[in-house]
Image 1: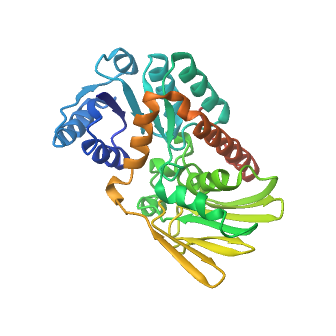
Image 2: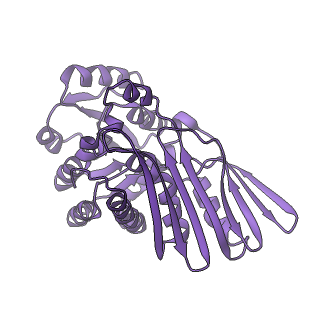
Length: 329
């Protein structure tokens, strides 16, 4: 059984622990938190899932923990690189939340460390190829002929945007936390684009920047050979509409690119609808399972490593063009 430490006490960590509670291959053993009372409160809640994790407050304690085989890093983006690298250098497997790093160079350092120590490293991008809905999208592409147009969208108004409008600075809108719409949810449609179509030949991009310079929303028009892909993302507005991929022989519609649940393929007057079991609070079960399997054979990480690297390079280029500078590796 894998002993798992968690870094971060936000909702995303609780969602992962819901998946952990249902998987007999892993046990939550350690909570890492610099704020001891907050860490203890989080551990007490986690204990209701049948595990009884203890709390440590430093990365050195995490590295030395003998009951930790793997680490889930879900802290603010700017801390990911340091925390993940410490765990990898201690010979522990690492699942790091998106965006895994601020830069592609930082990600490569993590990949190199994982290789040196023979451990698994994955970015926890829930809609990657291990999601059955994303896998279905891959399969459906071959049924619609040459791809000509695609529109990928994820726009979700943040529950913390009102606080920002009131003059506060929640972490998700704080440049010093390496945050913003692109780094938070832009990763999802861009990951899908890179996985399905590869790196674009060229692109145009723009963003809506907020009072402190952080991006609140953005768009990208990617140019491929004979194919235009439009990608939009937002933390300051909602869009319930689907994403669409148009081929010369058919069209694919997906309800939510970040968590595909209903995929419709229209070809030659026929409609094929695939419904993916929707788990919601436990929708991280797929990536947890992929991570556990990767700990048994770290070479399985090679392709996801490449996708993460390609997307991070693209995101750096986007930030450079829209004028957003972020700290960290």
